Structure formats: structure tokens, C-alpha cells
Length: 115
Image (cartoon, rainbow, N blue to C red; front, side, top):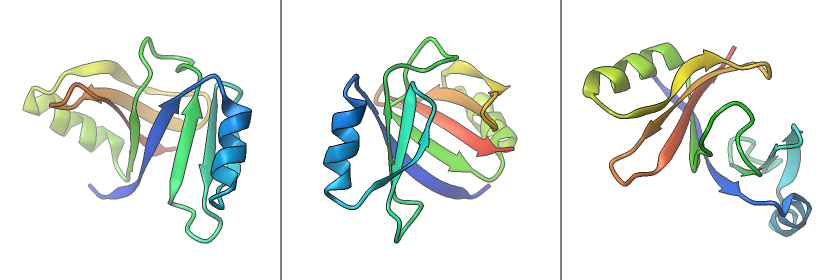
């Protein structure tokens, strides 16, 4: 299993202001579903930050996303380790397969792969 990218997720109602602020640092909007917006560096596209009002299909908002090349393997590793899975492995309408897990610090991590 390989990590493809890691990005912070900022829970906020200030999407426009966040886009403008991070735009000052060179970030550009690369995805916007209304409830989540992702900004990326044009020169280094894996350098990203997401701004989310609240998760559309999960009861909790993650604080970080980790994209891996094999989310099913990541899920099995986390489940077998006894880590707390706080949102089950599932396919989402926007083309990702994901689950949420709580890290030892209490932070919720969205682990995903694109389909």
C-alpha cells in the first residue's frame, strides 16, 4: 500500500473567503461539490487543502484525508489493528471509495482511493 497524498480538511462555512485566502498563497480551486472544496498548487498538484462545511454522507467531519493506492488493504490493516473505524468502507457517488478511522490523538482521518 502506498500513500498518494495527504491533505488537511478545514471545517468552515467560509468557503469563498478560504478560497481567496489560500489563493494568495498560490492555491487554485480544483474541485467543488458545494459542501467540500479542494484547493491545489498548480506547480505541485498533490499539495492540497480542503474546506468542508460538513461531510455529505458521514455523521462526522474528518480532519485529514489520506489517499492510498489500495483503500481495501488500508481498511483491512486498520480493522485488524483494532483501530476505531468511525465510518464504514463504502463507495461514494463522486468517484471515491473511503472509510474514516480515529487516530491515537482522537483525530478523524478519511482514508480513500479514487475508483
